[in-house]
Length: 110
Image 1 (tube, rainbow, N blue to C red):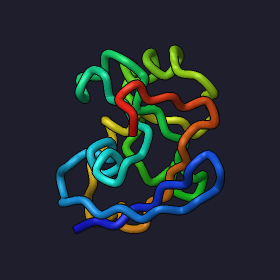
Image 2 (spheres, rainbow, N blue to C red):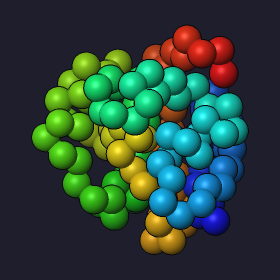
Image 3 (cartoon, helix red, strand yellow):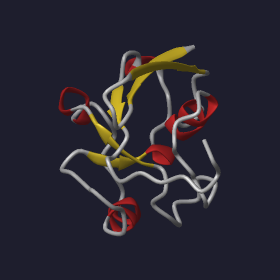
Image 4 (cartoon, rainbow, N blue to C red):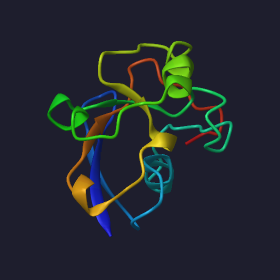
């Protein structure tokens, strides 16, 4: 299991664990984070946008051009923004910290 931390819009820190190979999106949804993932990880939306802690950003595989295009559509994008569906949990990401954007909305009701 890989442990990651989500920081909510009010600053609450919530730990999640996910099996190696699942997406950060899935790990976040499992603990009720407002990550809609409308396209179910097909990179056709930006509803799973997270902001990666700057200390971790450089450790991730670079975003693809398609991911960058989707991030252009996301609200409250920052320099370290990523789509959580594109971050696959690996042992190297143990302790990863991401923040939910301040303008996050989830129509699924999480």
